[in-house]
Image (tube, rainbow, N blue to C red; front, top):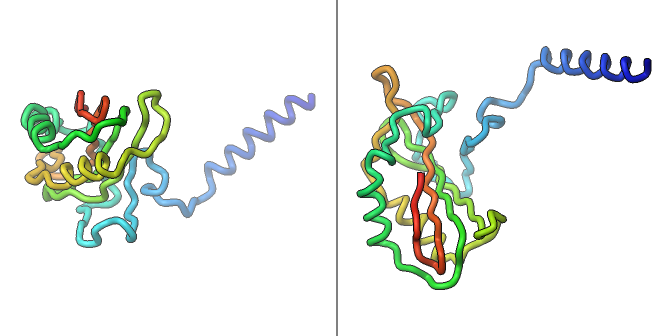
Length: 165
C-alpha cells in the first residue's frame, strides 16, 4: 500500500509540474544551444531568429558538401605541435546571413575524458575555424535560418589525423 501511495504521489507531482509555467526559456534548456556570453562573444553577431536555431543535421550539410576543400584548408594551414592526442571540437552558429559566431571549444583526450590542449593547438584550430568565411546558411522550404555547426579534429602526436563530421 505504501508503495502504491508513493507511486501515485510521484505521478501527481509530475502532472502538476507539467502544468506549471516555467521561467526557463527554450534557449536555456535545449541540448546543444550556444547561449550568448558577453565576456567571450562578439556582440555584433546577431541571430535572425533566436527562438529557432536549427541543428546541423536538420538542413543541408554544407560542411559535408565541401569537406574536401575544408580538410585541405585545415591540413595546409595547421602547424602541428608535438605531444598531445585526443579530440578538439569547435562548435559555433551560422546565422541566416552566413556569418559565424558564438564559438565554443570542447576538448577530450584519447580516452574521451575532458582535458585541456596546449593553447598553441586549441587556439590555432579555433582561429582557423573563425577565419573561414562564406558559409551557406541553413535553408528550409525556401527560407534561410540560423543553425549550429561543429567541426571535430582528431589529433595524434599533435597532428590532425581526421576531421569530422
